[in-house]
Length: 423
Image (cartoon, rainbow, N blue to C red; front, side):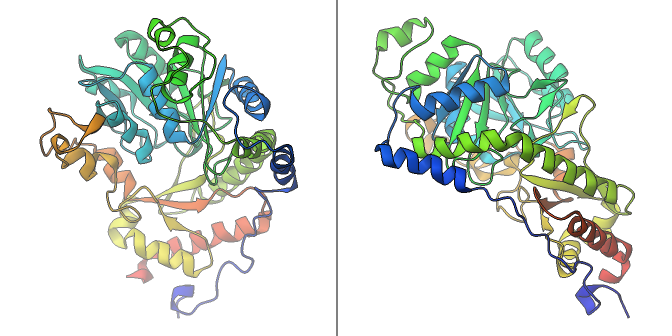
């Protein structure tokens, strides 16, 4: 008789990992209640809790300026706008990312150009960046996906040599570093989401960082009516205290929550890193599972989720869905990767209908593009397409018993050691 729980055997996980980390703790409640007691329901400038948080976040990232916003998508739109992305331009980015890395590009009436990824790290492939640069390339957006840091030495060199602006999407990587320097501080603008379960969260919020006061002013011009200007951009000064009409201000209650989370970030990162390294060590020699390590010089952080790859042989023999089903039956909280077409109907971004099939001449406003009257060729991204179908996920555990994590790893090993029985 099989030992697999899927077929009636005993579960490998007898103690379900219990997350003891409370995101909305007493400090968050006190910070928000203090604003409520003061009657503070909106802040339009860099004062109060908004100013305090921006100063602390700028310091954490080693940046000159931080600008709090209502979500991470707004920070990316602001960044693309600030560096001058316009109709006819192209912006390079990885195909393996959340769609908010790409959709703000079309808010600038520009074209996303998707690049392949490195199979070892899931981050953008510098060689493929080089291959896809054209005379229309205006900017590059790199994504430190699930806390794993891109090769910033090579990426900065590419941007310098080709004269293109670098945007960092660090939505999963609060506190991560490359050779001791915080992510978000390498490019023209660094963008951070603070939504939902992010390491620093306001429920719905975001923050952008930059060293350039002129770029800060352009972001203020786009979405922060009435906020003081810092630089000397002529068009910004001509428009004066009027804005361009978007409203990307952050809610002070959200920032109060995020400010508490920022203070807890070092502890969160220390715990998550230790847990991920423990699981990687437990699974490193497991047949059919490939762990995802960081590049030399990179210090991962924030994570959001833990990622592992199934081997090609395991996928060909059984299929990811069946393996996930068996691991879940053992009590392990394993799911298929949520960026794949298992969880989202469009799958990887370079295959999404918005970028391959939609006739943008039928759309109004900034989404209208006379150069995109119909279907566009789907780029060949063999690594992303391969890896995307082999990824599985675990929650980004913070404060759980080590014995529970060992049982989760044991459950995953158990399934892989009985892989033949799943057929």
